[in-house]
Amino acid sequence: EWSEEKPSSVLDKHAHFKNFGIALLTLFRVATGDNWNGIMKDTLRQDDSPHAGKNHFMIIISPIYFVIFVLITQFVLINIVVAVLMRKLEVTS
Image (cartoon, rainbow, N blue to C red; front, side):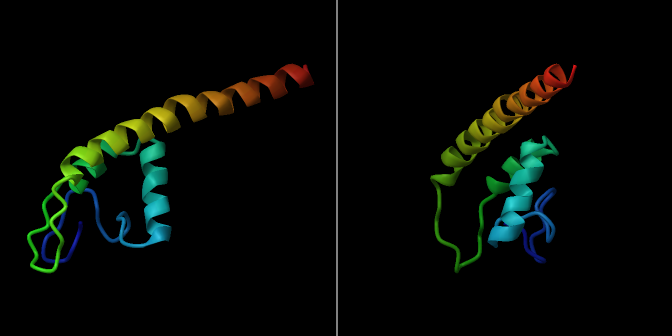
C-alpha cells in the first residue's frame, strides 16, 4: 500500500484501500477504466514493514480479482446501462 515513506505510482492519498469510502472511490476508478492496471500493479507490491502481515497469496488473488471486476463492470454493467438507455429511447420514439 501507499505510504509517505514508500510512494507508489498510482495508489496515493486519493486512491487506496485503507478505508471503506476511499476504497469504493478507487473501485469506481477501476470500473471506469481509469488506469486499473496501474492500481492492480500497486496492490502487488510487497510491504516490507515489520508490522505488515505476510500476504503472499495476494500475488495470486489480486490479478484474478481485478480482471474479474473489470470484466464484470466494464463489459456487463455498461452494456446493461446502454440497453436500458436504448429501451428508453425506443419507448419515447
